Image 1 (tube, rainbow, N blue to C red):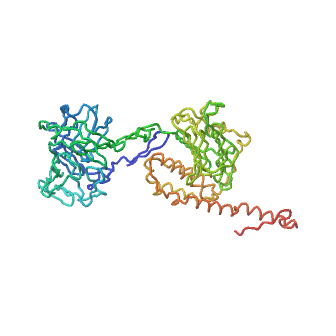
Image 2: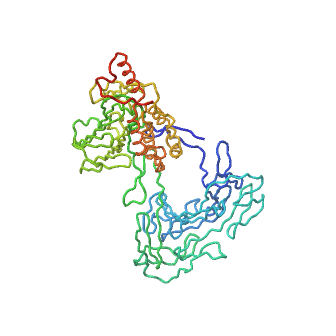
Image 3: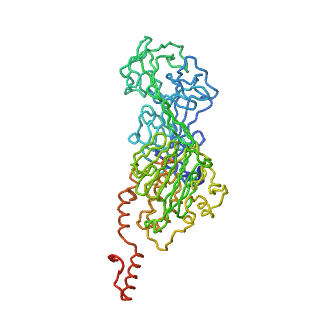
Amino acid sequence: MRFCFGAYNGLVECKNTCPKTDGCHLVVTDGCCKVCKGCNYKGVAYASHTDWSEPANPCKVMRCEAGVVTISDMHCYTPCPNPLPPEPGKCCPTCSVCKFNGQVVAEDRDVVSEDDPCLKCRCSRGRLTCAKRSCPVLQCSRAMQERAPGECCPRCNGTRAILLVPNTCPIQRSFFREGQALKLDKCIECACVNSTSVCTRSACPILECAPELQRTFPAHCCPTCIQQPTDELISQCHYAGHAYEAGTSRATPPSRFNARFVRQDGNVWKLDACSSCECHDGKVSCARIRCNTTCAAGMKQINVEGECCPQCVELEGACMAFGDPHYKTFDGKIYTFKAMGRYQLVEQCGAGNNASAFSIKVANYATPHYMDSPITKRVAISYGGARLNLQQRLRVKYNGRRVGLNFERAGQFALRKLPEGVEVRLHNGVVVVWNGRSFLEVTAPAAFKGRLCGLCGNFNGDLQDELRLRSGKTVGDKDVGAFGASWCVGKRAECAQKPKTTRRTHGDVGACKHLNGRDFGACESQLSNTKYYKACKMDMFNCAHGKCYCESLTAYSRECERLGVQLPPNWLKNSRCDARSLRQSHARATSRPSTSTTKERLSKLLHQAARGQQPGAGHARQPIPIQ
C-alpha cells in the first residue's frame, strides 16, 4: 500500500506503508500487506523485531523474530570503579560519566567493544550503561545466515513464505506440534506454545581477552579465554609494533553487577575518530563508536573532519532549467515558461552593485532540434568582477576570452570538467552545472535563504509565494507568463516574441518510459516523477533529434541523487542519453532536412518551372532529398 504527500522543498514524497520484510523467513499476509510473522507469548501479541522484559526480572530479556521468541539472560558490564545501582525497572548498574576506553561517548550514542561485538554501551541522560545480550534464534537455516564484519548477530538472507499448519510451529527446516519440545543444538531448546516457537538460549559471559585468545570447545556453548586473567601485573601492551604502558587492575568483591576486575585508567590511544584502545595488564582492549545519526526533513548529514559521526545541517537549495524550457525552483515548484530572450535566473535581491553579489542570467532562443521552440542556449555568470559565459557544446568564456574546462581564479571561481558537462564552483559556495545543451542546475547554500530572486524563486521554503514579480507582487500559476516576463533583462520586444508552434509530433513520447524503468525504480518511493514525465512528453512533442527526453531524465536523476538514492552508474547508457548517443542523434538530425523544408523547396521549383524559369534560378543549386 502506497500513499503520497507533500514534503520539504515542494517535493512529492511517496511511501510504502507496508513494513519491510527483508531477511524474514516467515512472511505472512496481513490485510493489504505482507509482513513478517509476529509472536504470541503468554497471551500477548508481539510484532517481529520486538524486545521486552518482565518487570519482576528485568535481566531476563525476550525478543520476537519471525515467529520465534528467544529468552536469554542479560550480562552487565561496568567500565567504571564505582557504578551506580540500576535504575527502577532496569537490569544493569550505570556509570556516572559517559566514558569508555578513554573516549567520551556522546548522548544517545552506542559504543561497541571490538573484543566482543555483542557488548554494547550506551550513554543516556549522562549515564553510561553496558550490557551483553544473546542473539535471537533465526527462522532460516544456518546455510542461509550471514554475519557482517564487526556485527554481533547473524541475519537471514532473502525471504521465505510457507503454508502454516494449525497447531504447529515452523522453525528453520522443521515443523513441530503444539506442546512438543525440540532441541536445535546443545545451546538452544525450543517448545511450541500457541503456534509460537519459544526458545531458551544460553547467554555467554563477557570475556576479558582479545578475540584471538577466545576458543569454543566442542562440549561448550560459549567461547572461553585460553589464557585466563591473573593477578600478576604486566606493565606493557604491544599493539601494531608499539609498546604502551599498562594501567592497573584491582580485585573487587564479586557481585551480580561487576566483572572479575574493575578497570582503572590506563594508557589510551586512538586508532581513528571512532575507535580507541586501552592497555590493562598487558591486554589491549579496543572499542568503536556506532553512529545512529538521523536528520529531520530539510536537513542532511555531513562528515566533519576529526569527528566520528556525521552532523545534520540545513539542505542547500537547487534550481534547475531544462528542456523546452522547464524550471524547478529552489523551493521545489516546477513550471514551464516558453519565451525567447534573456532572463534573470537568479540574483541576490537588493544587492545593487555589490561586487561580492552573484548573478546568473540565461538566454533562451529557438533551436532546430526543438522544432524552433526556445531552450536555454547560454548562461552568463557574474561574481566578484568575473564574467563567465557558458555556451553550447561546453564552450566557456572568461571575461570575453575562451578558456578550458579545468580553469581556476583564486578567490573567485573554479571550473571543473564533469563526465557529462562542466561545473562552476563560486567562492561563495554557489555551484553551477551545465551540460552544454539545455540542462542547467544552480545550487545555493542555506546561507542564501530568503535572499534570492528571479526565475528560480526566492528560496524561503514557501511554495505559495514562489511566483513573485520583480515588483514584489506574487501571482498565481495562471500568470506564469507575466512572472517570467517581469524578469526579462534583454530587449523587451525580444522577450515578448512568441515561439513558433507545430501541430506535428516529431518525437516518440514513448521514450519517456525510461522514467518508470528499472534504473529509476529505487527513487520512485522517494520522489514522484509525474511532473518530470509531463515535461518529458512536452519536449518530445517538438523534438527533431529524438533525444529531448534526456533533459528530463537528467533533471530527475539529479533530484534522486540529492535525496541520497544511488542510481545505476550506467543509466545514461541504458537510456541512450550518454554523450556518444546524443552526438550521433544530433548529427543525423542536422544532416536530414525536415519534411516541411523539402516540400517548400519542391513547391518553389515547380512554380519556377510553370513560369518558364530555369529551376533554381538566382540560387545555388541544392540537391532535392529523396523521401
